[in-house]
Image 1 (cartoon, rainbow, N blue to C red):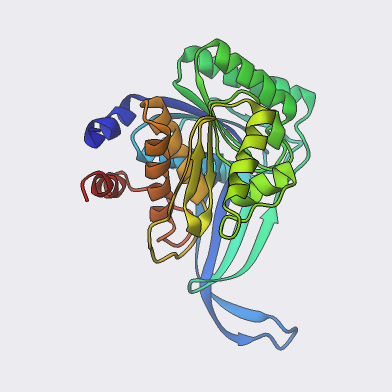
Image 2 (cartoon, rainbow, N blue to C red):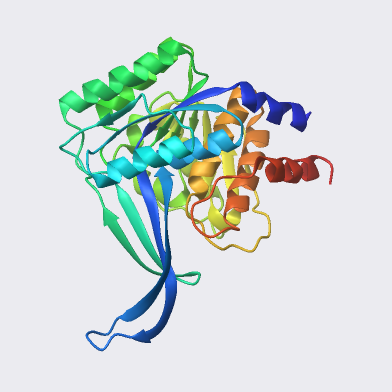
Length: 329
């Protein structure tokens, strides 16, 4: 396997992401005392940062890996929407398939940090499903992008209402018709709507909730195999990739399965790791890698971003270097 050539091939790939976008905001400082007004800490503000999150963070990861990316979603017309568009522009990600609606809030997750300690999170969001009018607009915008030519369509679901059952099923069918690969990072509400996709990537919590089953990777390792079979029976998809946090990743293709263990790391923050994994797995799928190879490289990528504070994109050079060590230890 010529990893360098595979990683170079990422530069020729075109990928669209449809799903929930958001801003990840960080309020950073130090807690020195408790408030005299209530039993809460007082944070002395040092700085604030705003980063692209959700499906937009998947786009950032794809871009960091060299791919051409297109983002398809719905945001509001509020001040957060203006900030979101500004962040897209700064990241040189086009916004032609971003639909704005006065009826929706732009999702913002604000994390309050004292040093590296997460003190509080504040969410601004709408989680109701898109109206039929907005569904129509998003479906048509995404179909236009597919018609212009892409290699894969990623469904990035954060349960914020953008990916309705209708949006999911119509776009999977259209992508299949056009020969475009489909990959999914799911959440509970529409977990079983993604029938027939090429790659389905839940984490352990999501598959347990989505199928309403118990899985104990440590004490009952067969339970994840049974869970994956149940999933395949319901979705009839091609490849399952389940992230298992400190236990690594599980991968199966209907014939064989494998658990690839996690690599020992200094974990700082797991935020956004799933976004990185689906981005890397999708490009590896387009490149024609085997299930084991896809899982191994995606597993490395998730671990790499967990070494950094906050939501960050994967470093392509660092990922290539680590992948080469796996092949040539």
